Image (tube, rainbow over all chains, first blue to last red; front, top):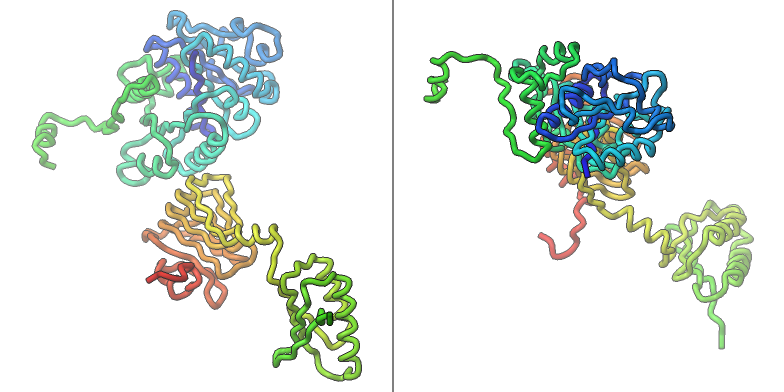
Length: 266
Length: 226
């Protein structure tokens, strides 16, 4: 029996889809059988980020209305041998085309076969959000170190607490370390204290993420990027490992300063 | 056996007190009351208004019955009913009074979009985040950070206070008065503070300890205390 995890944020543009794609891919890299569900009907893009856009034949609305079987709509990611699948959203309808119950049924069905089902939630708190959380057992809330994103995350956490879901976990995305250090951005401790939920991971703002998304290749496939390591760490934490938080210091230090550090000289 | 009077009238310097018997039937009582005030006070029409306080003993009066008595006395032109007192209250009222004087403790974070409302005092073990609201009929005590909106004494109790371990509210409301945070972020810390309505009807924020003098009623310990 698998676990269904919804990735949500309230605010748009904080990186829900990127997070879903990368955590899903990272879990598949760990040998887990993963299914990604895009519930952003009308504004789908998880397929684009995954580089699977050209293979979409049936979508979630076709499954909900019975035009096709669930397994027919699933797209297999060839990069992972039968481990990573995607159920795409429809582009032609809107959020009201499916009901929470229909999604719940699909997720229940997928849970029989997959280890993890990652549900990519649309922005907002309306029908699309209700659809996305309907079948979820766990929730991941994505936020960025901006007041507006944190406000919305707070609202979403409040709504999630009313559902029969485990307490949500937090991912802070797009961290710019130099701004945080200067105090121009809210720091990680402040954010987690304010939202008072467990921190699942932090992801640095990394241009490579944008490049990778544009190429349709999740960043986790590139082992040299900071963000990639961050997503891999998050996947390992989901699997129950305890991985320390990534050090975001990017300034490469010379040998001399490393020796100084060793002796505690500033 | 000689029947006792059902209505006794006592004069005091503040006005009249009517003691109504609590064992006879209500119609009987009403009838006797009418007779009494008609007989005794018909002649002196020119006297100034007389306030009347009514004690009903252990009789519970419904709203209708209370109104009937008020009407009866109102018709005697120079009488004004000041209050009707009774030794008993209904279960409903007692429950309400209990709830209004109770401190309700809640352990949670009140998040954006959430409203937490209690009839009496609120003791919140947690934070109020921006966009969240707490409302209480009485006082509000927050053991965590207040960053959202707090409305104390929402039914008009201006004696109500708001206390918080960290006072950074977006808005404070006490009764009908509103105070909002300054537009500019002040860098001071606001630990252990309280808000109350002062004599000029403005909500002021001050050290928690000022309440000891300003609101002695907050102390409910009656005996055996310090």
